[in-house]
Amino acid sequence: MSAKSDQYARQAEEWTERAYADAASYLSHRADLVVTLGPLLERGDEVLDLACGDGGLGGLLLARGLRYRGVDSTPEMVTEGNRRLGARAVIAVGDLNDYVPPGPVAATTVFRAIYYARDRKSFFRHVAGFTEKKLVFDLNPRQYRLDDVLADLREAGLGRVVLRPFFVPQTVALPGRFVALAGALERSGPLARLALRFRFTYLVAASR
Image (spheres, rainbow, N blue to C red):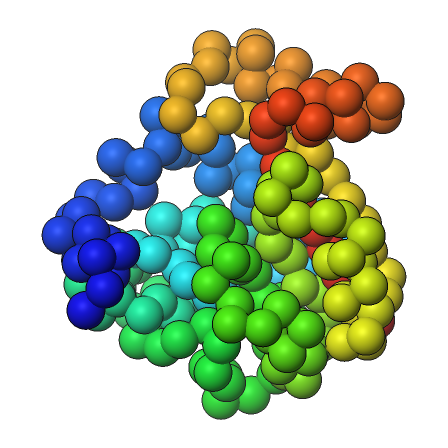
């Protein structure tokens, strides 16, 4: 087991509650964008959440009428996810590079984990093979050149891309009115792009 895997195994219990200063606000905003960014998801659509951790996003997607399937490479995280969501969802052990769901899914998500792809082009092609509506993931534009990622998506047949800055912070809890302000700033155009030069991430929705 790698040091990183061992870290996740030891911290699996209540991972979501400890990883986010305000898990409810952060993950609710993420869930809203999973549904609305790019092609709209509809009630009954299935979301495959690769590198799902303890399934913290799952409850919020289920509450929006979606079906949820989570996959994580750390067995302890999968155990926590099954404890958290029970019979409402399917959560299994698997590697995001290799996992194939039993049938097509409407959307595939990969959050805080795109860097685990062994080869990004191959990963996008792999996901495109079983994803019907869209792939949604977060991207740090200071870590990866956006043009390179867009080119890889086009090669995988996922050339329709919608970008949305994501300004709700992970490690700071904001008062409710500031969460709303952060959401408004995400749509501020040049100001949002300026902020992304220094911190925060994009949410990317890629489709055919």
